[in-house]
Length: 416
Image (cartoon, rainbow, N blue to C red; front, side, top):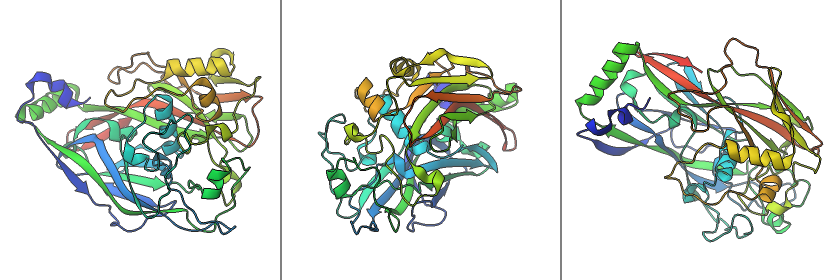
């Protein structure tokens, strides 16, 4: 529950300011596979969705063929995982690929995001057809915001919680292209292995909005805790499950009071085999050269999920049916986001592939969860694909509504 919105017209004496958060380890350089940690203000009313990570991204290293790395990576794909800890309780951070997933989901939902998170995109570039990519000579400031999970939970009074730590993990995957690879249109089967890190993050820090309100806020919180025994904070939580390379089945099992959506994406990242390089995953470069990426589907490919013996959809979906069901399952966009048209069927299939199966009500309300309750049952989910090309690693991401129950004495209980 966002108590600020519950106050409605009663809100008075409102103030707002922004504060800068310093990393726990200082503003030193962070390389792929490294972590950036912050502790949120402990006695403040904070607007969690305003949390914004600012970094200066520089390119470094050479490929084994001597080619100098020349391109800044896409913002979200630098992030492998975001973990939030509250007094030792892990609130979210259920696996890898979450930055890449967020980028694909925004593309599919028609959200172009912040200009600062896409630093190399030409302002007038058509994401479907354009090929203009700026060369970065030195460092580029990147700002990442609109994080998922607990950081999307709204306005929260941190004085009611134990210390909250945000831990951001940078991806180990190679997310930088060279000029030669761009010129080739990414048609090569694999880029040359690289001998050192391909990007470095410098000067990391975060900005967060702090809010002040009148005494009616405290009285409302006390009233809710007094009547319920706890203050509920609802937010989305994500868990990822992956297959081995060239495996068309992904098994998953998650316990939740409300599984709202099941997402599927693929990557031709061969990290599972311990390779020293990454073959580009789909939608990595946000619209550059989509025609050069191999499609996950052939004309006879099908998609189906088995949930505890129930088949979803009832008959295996072909690529056209899957696209329609995905568009019908997407969550609503925030009207404050920068909106553009979602990708066409062909670009979704060939470059921006991410599928979605909704299990909750079409107009969901996190205060009244309507998804699948998997507590006390053996979910044993299984994604099955047929007649798809080799070379891919399949990933299932489950989206659930979690509830953090804040009790007197800074005691918390997570109901996933």
